[in-house]
Length: 462
Image (cartoon, rainbow, N blue to C red; front, side, top):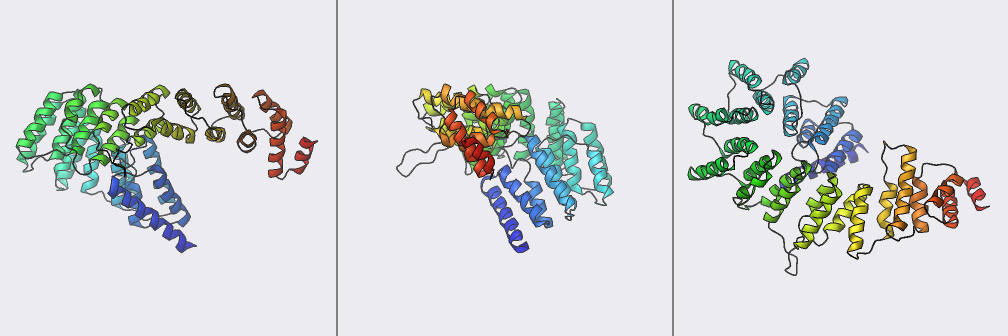
């Protein structure tokens, strides 16, 4: 059993690693499966635990930063409880995740926690702590760490200068941010494409599109070429800082190099989490489309639709994007994909809005569409709320969509999800939702039999 469990963990981690290499992203479900494998196995090697920690930042773009942070903290707690050996690399990986997720934490407390366990910080640790101060625009705090690095004779590399550029930008001092380029030159370091991307993200916060475009052109003259991934990061910075109308000039600079689609998907997912569907649609249109066997273009944007639903965007916005995708010939299944995702997520309001839209398009509305909504379970809901939810779905089926709940629907999905033990009350509740006495009583008798409650079933039958 132990060998089987270990093999399962190895397979899960191998799949994680392959996903990262192939697409640059993984799903939360994959990470949760690995965490469960670690718990079952009750151990993990140093390398395995390091990989899992690293995967909780921007490699999970579908999830909000706070969700990713909660996940890495759960993983960290599990590893500690299992006494998995962790060294400075693990703490550095945790720092990187916190930076990706812009998670607020105290660098001094983080250092104190490491030192209390006898783990000595290294150059990477200090670099990432400088990044944290710079993320907050705290140049003074970053300078303190920088001085400490100099005392320890730790080399200051491009990563540190890039962080300082970000810090000055966050502090609204773009002049000092630009001045870091000259300081780098004095230190014998040539600013790279990553350095310029960091600087231009700072100018994107201010919406200075002219400076951004001029700098990109100047970089090319010096044979410093920003990758499509870099351009996308600047677009993200423009959009999320209140300048979505200015992204068009940068979209024109995208070259669509190898691997572009995966980079675009990752940024689109993050943009949707921040509520920028319009910019996401612009980027979607830049993505080369695959072709089907018959030569026709394949549907595109399914991932975008699913993310809109998962990010709980307003029903009107989801419907508008689905309409745009359908009308533009980009995805003729957009509404169905949105509906499937909404049903799986138990979102009643959005599901009903999409069902109504499909009904207007004369698409068939099936009985089984409503089953996930009857089964949806909100742990925070009271019994009264859960009861009302089931009854509202049953009412809506007949009143809004002219579908009378079948015996199977009532028997398999409605009655088992009503948090009421008394069959007489259940039958009365079902009747208020328009269910006939015959269907209501036979369904309750069936459920009683399934639960081995023969007396209850006999009473209902009588």
